[in-house]
Length: 193
Image (cartoon, rainbow, N blue to C red; front, top):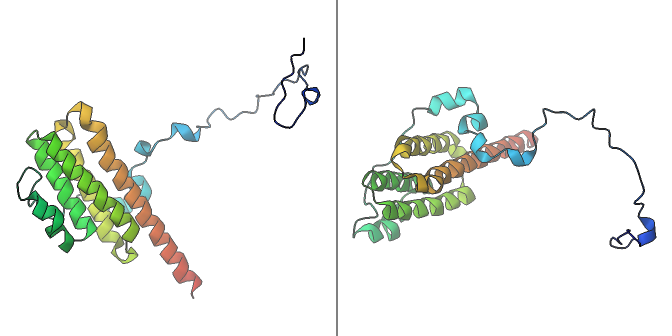
């Protein structure tokens, strides 16, 4: 009985099933951590921008007042009119403030509306970021992160992944994009000299 199995273009006679080679694993680095075991949750904003620079922003708060919340009948005016007169960063602050207020009042569905708006403006921000605003945007990211951390214990456990992890991962991604854009701008300026 033939135990050889053909693989793609090789014939069954090209495969040696009688080999007794042993893999020597005595030189394997036991401290190696595979990439798949590292998650974005293990990377803080502080790790991305550096401890010294992070300390400048560590006390950051949301830059804009709460305004009209998702539980108001006037919220469509906020979404469709007023938001057009603010930057994406300011709109992200508004949405996080709305999430805070709705979670404090136990209105999870309304908090979700704010979160969905936050994600929309975060996507816009990432596509339209201006490196000249680096420090302002880093402060904004830390402020939004601080705001979510302040209400984390008020968010029901079944919504933690959606709201807390969702905002923290988004902010880490935005800070990474800001830092990459800053590096690219620096390299371009250096190359133009």
